[in-house]
Length: 187
Ligand SMILES: [Ca+2]
Image (cartoon, rainbow, N blue to C red; front, side, top):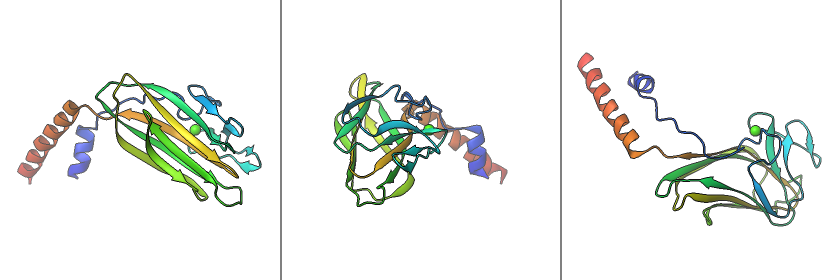
């Protein structure tokens, strides 16, 4: 009851994503730059075949299908505020096309590896969440280094959000104390 009341009266501060086309709903790789191997890398339409396997999206109609047989990468330079922290959220599916896993996927934030997967087995969309990503400059590169010899990764709903300002949390905390006090008095 108290939690519900708090959620209504003091919703968490809403902040906007700083990523472009993280949903791939443009139907292409708008906003992203590719390097290295570009074979078998595309925004795919859910329900169609991607090299003989079904494309599925986590949401909407499109996802990024990424199965370069040699190392490739895609990246985006984000506009960030130095000293602020951000959180990355995305959904990943892997299909090894009925063969043994021979793949790797690394996520780099400003050149530092913050997630590394190797020989990922078959799985449907799973959420990955990485918090506390510090920006040191006004332009931070978010990069995915990928190789997937027999299969393909499917990536969707990439989101980078700034963590709330300390001030927002102070406001929220003071609101909780206020409401808690009233709740206790009412009971
Ligand atoms: Ca999508």
